[in-house]
Image (cartoon, one colour):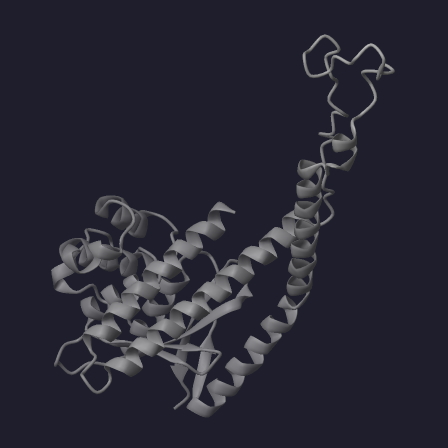
Length: 303
């Protein structure tokens, strides 16, 4: 559950960064359309995350029973010596175990509330189970849609290992392809001290990303939920996933534009925002198809 929560936080940070970039580029004529698009992106993300939470709940709770504690303690006994229960001598005595008319009519509200909650939980579990059964279809649909897009755009997919480094490895592969097989060079402004000939290519792109974010903190701090030093340390030294913020940092550090193709046909364009001559990198982005969930692959032009 913690990994799913962390994934959702990362997605929300990435979305806010994308929304900020879109709003900065808006004009008077396009502002309304961009605001509508941003609202739709937020709605889609919320819907996807709600579905993932429901699927997770269905997998972890399916088969478990719901025990309803017995909170019915029986009728309240009256104290025969109290002022309220003293009876006139001419009246027949009422035993202490006999409930009054008011008690026999009063419903047990707590028991009814627990039963209602149990019914609601059972309904949610049934819905989560039905949604979980649809996941294999979502995976196959995503594969089929991607293949159709690759053909229409003249692209061939290079599959990247699903290990937490996929974004950085995919960008490294694209940079290497752009330079006819040479390893991606580290920009002079972001030398990291690592051995560029013996380190894995993804390690170099990770270090460049961390260095850029650290040196341009003002651009990224509004979207961070933890101290800057901790954030860049995770990028540089761990297998922490990357997202939109990291793509933006790499686009600016390497002076490239990055197109991220999704199965819906949408292309998320991350621009370096410079006027220099630059190349365009292509990545594919999957929601459902790989073991860790979200995944990036590298896309090569067929020609």
